[in-house]
Image 1 (cartoon, rainbow, N blue to C red):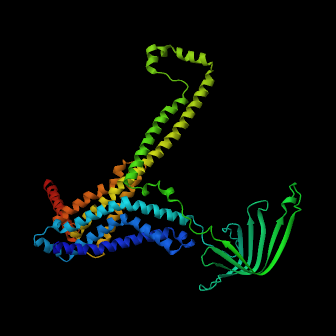
Image 2: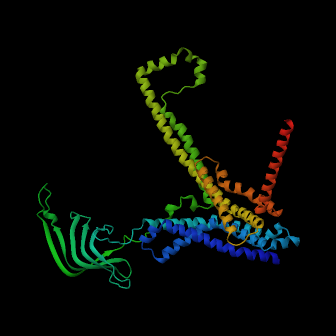
Image 3: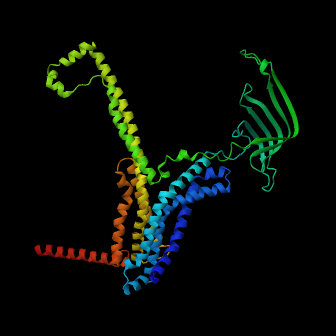
Length: 503
């Protein structure tokens, strides 16, 4: 490896990893902001939260790679141009394409890595990340008692607190509660309902060491319970229950222990999420696409054959015309005579049959459309395994060429240009996906639309950079504007002279 290659690669890797880290961090912050309520209200441990961030960090890598390559290549050649290193290279007989050669090889390697990542790692990370996120979203919120409001999320209990006083964080006794009312619900047998109520002047609420049980330590209260003798229970309407017994137990210190089994995260079977196209690799996507196509074709043929049951009569037009039966209308008379159907009844029957056919056709068209959309989604994801890799190479062409043209390094102009091109890439990708999923565009066109538009731009910028184009120099446009003004003035003078000569 020559010194010039080491110089260019050394200038590339620093901005590349920095940009990649920043983009991943921004996407993770977006995730946190979007699901902040679920994360705050659920009692997540650090291990679970760390696994979630790890999975989604992996998911953002394919999206972050094009921007990282674009910005780092732009900054690399922008710095070389700003400090006249590109000029020195060209004066030494080294062309721009030769200077780009090491980064070109790196861009191809990153594209290959991106393809492997999209096909192998991304499906696994999607499955793990989104299944864990679903479990977090569906988990119950942590226990949060509010003053004067019954809390009913604990299975079998309704709890109300008049006043709640927060205890110090280092205290193991929990919060101090005033005026507790606790209903214990019985959900089985003849005693279903509110059969027990606990009233306490004060108490404390805390978790055990394993955080498996919630403990209420109650002070100075009474436990009211109602029992019924099932043998003497009265089933007579309006008759009182003669077997009911009431019992009151007073206490000065009483501990109520409640299981927290219903809280926390319960892992869902990951197989329930595998149907999604983002959880599949190329082989699985190809197999599913073929299966869906065959199913769509088979269903379409079944619709045509099944629809015949909605018709009462079927005629072969050629046979009818050959027999010349249509001309004198004998077949109508024969049908009416055979069926003995009055004309109004026949019209009503025809209308009913037509409505049935319309309903049948509408439902099948909707069903087949949804099946076809499923095929389009799997095809689109198959193409994206390749398009995201190719976009890295295209971003390199744009970034390196723009850096050599503008000759500006640092995080000023390069960052602005990179963001503009990345947003353009993102918008084109989203638009193409939308049109492809709706059937407005052929799926390959929708999937490759962003690359089709940006590749000519990259090649054009490369051609301009090789010829030392001053595309973004202000004085070029100032000079062009002055020339245009002079031409307009000259044209006006000539026109006025011609008019005066005619007069």
